[in-house]
Amino acid sequence: MLSRNNVLQRCLLIVSFLCVVQGAKILGLFPVPGKSHYILESTLMKALADVGHDVTLVSPFPKENYQPVNGTYREIVLTGFLEAHAERRKAVNLFETPSINPLSAIYIMNKIGLKLTENTFKHKNVQNLIHSNKTFDIVIVGQFMNDALKGLASHFGGHLVLFSSVGTSTWVNHLVGNPSIPSYTPEMLLSFPARMTYFQRMKNALFNAIYNINQHLIFYPRQNKLLKKYLPNAPDLHDALFNVSLVLLNTHESIAFASSYVPCMKAIGGFHVKLPKRLPIELENYFNNSKNGVIYFSLGSNVKSKDLPKQTREGIIKAFSKLKENVLWKYEDDNLPVDLPSNVRIEKWFPQQDILAHPKLKLFITHAGYASTIEAVYHGVPIIAIPIFGDQRMNAVYAETKGFGSILPWSEITEETMIAKIREVIDNSKYKENAKRKSILMKDRQVQPLDDAIYWINYIIRHKGAPHLRVASLDLAWYQYYLLDVYVPIFVIIYMFSISTKILYRKYFKKNEKIKSS
Image: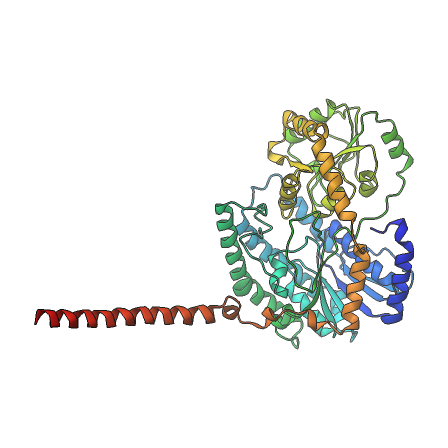
């Protein structure tokens, strides 16, 4: 998210970094086969290479052969991951799968996390890296149910940095001692607002407790077994998990409910947003010829519009045909199964950031993925959120709560509901005004977020892991953290005092009774 006015600042920043931190070796482990994840992760790693570092990126995506400005950039590809993911996606249509309750989601994520972690460890390219005797100053791990991979930091002799693509959550908070107080910190999978009702707080507290029990009694022990299986000489997983030097959070107060952070957590949300480029001539002409503006409709890289139920898809098409605006629809097949309205254009891919930056764009209909939500906020575009799974519901709730978006559950989409929702968001100026207000907040930063991320990684290198950022709560046992060792003795003392008082009172009372009767 580098503005033209900040080019000199960026150049000075690069020079200062090169003078202080000379070509550190940085490893990035990002095994999640999601394109939106990769865009974020590769943006960070390329920037680190540009300021002079020796960067190695491990991911499932093909090599880009990126040539950095100053440092080196090499890619280790987890071959086969994308193909396996595509096969799994063919077998599961998210629109035909019953809604998954949060407790079931924990079980499913346990399975996904274990499989992803083991597949990463046993991949031949990762095995070659493990046995290469290489060392790294920094190991950055994408935080996604892959905790055993954090043990590679000690294996390579580097400081551990986490990157969270969805901002802060219970998954990350307890690793660095950041408070996750259920009374005002909604769990991601529950999608509650920050100001919860009594029953929402009750559900939130129960889910928080169940999640933590699962992590410590089920998930971490299984991840520890994987760690010992592939790195027999590695320290216990507990030592790796709770020795995190830095957490980079893809969030900001303009796109998420305000939250507390311990010193080693840094919010860099919006760092991947690039300066808009001129649209391809055909798209530019499409916008220029759209007298009433353009609506952009995309469900992201993981959810496919072509998988929408037939009835839902037909309802969307009928709704679009009755709009005065033109529509760009990211659709994964070459042709729709019914006639395409004259005001609708479909493509398998669109330059999303450049489209969102166009002044004639009126509305973004989105799945409310975190990256898409960030891009919409940055460019001040109101949204209609059609959340499908994961953090999307949380992002949709935030957009609706803050007034720059409105939720339309995919199961409720009909011709009538789609038209009504589009007209509500476009014709009611509050949505655009709130979107613009959020855009101003996101851009009002003392330091550009990508520069901030680079600064803090260099800070960790300069200060040898920066242990002074580590909070004391990480050294406490769970009963000490919750003050049980303080409250229980106090309760026992009060209880014993009350019992003793009762006994003495009864003895004294009976003695007085005997004296009176005699």
